[in-house]
Amino acid sequence: HTGEETSSDPVGILRAQGDGLCQPIPDGERRAMEALYDGEIQYTDASLIGPLVALLRDRGLYDHTLLVITSDHGEEFGEHGCWLHGANVHEETMHVPLVIKLPAGRHGGTRVAEVVELVDLVPTVLEVVGLEGERYTEGLAGASLTPLAAGVRPGEPQEAIGMKLDSWERGGAPQVGVADFFYARGDHKLILVDRQPDDAP
Image (tube, rainbow, N blue to C red; front, side, top):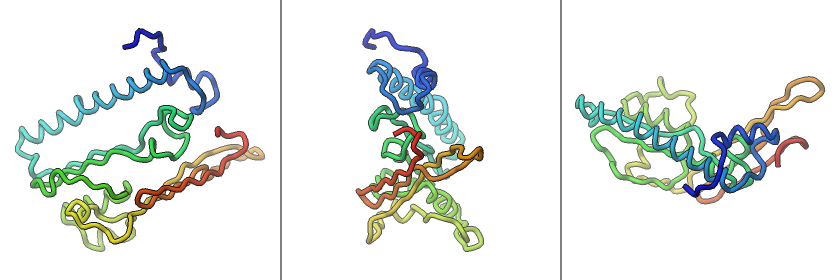
């Protein structure tokens, strides 16, 4: 703690200023937001994930369990002039944690650097639990991640796409469209921005 005076609700301050999530804020407020986020992560680990793992171990189920821990988005703390999530599709909000514990400790400790997408989770779970047939996977997007965990690397860099939708009113009617689009391949990422004139930069 720096002893610097900060608000107890930095997110509320951003919203109250009415300029959305892209605006300068004092350094102390940024640090306060980061500390609140760190606290959320610690709370999730100590109150949810840790007790779940302990319960599975106590009941003798841990070794037979498929456990997937992930997030739907990350958070931005001013790296591109914006805060929290929903303002853009930069790495801070799109690169999320993904931890998969396979049953029987298979491929334990493996770290995969390739780009993957969250749509890969359903095919992965179906394969691990033995529901791989076309009956279960027909029409699914994504591909199982178990080959990557086993050390099978694709010949080409993996790809991922994503987008941010925005809504606005035009001519009295609500409109929805793609505001930001990203394409990632290996270590490279392309971001296309197509926003309405009154949107945040």
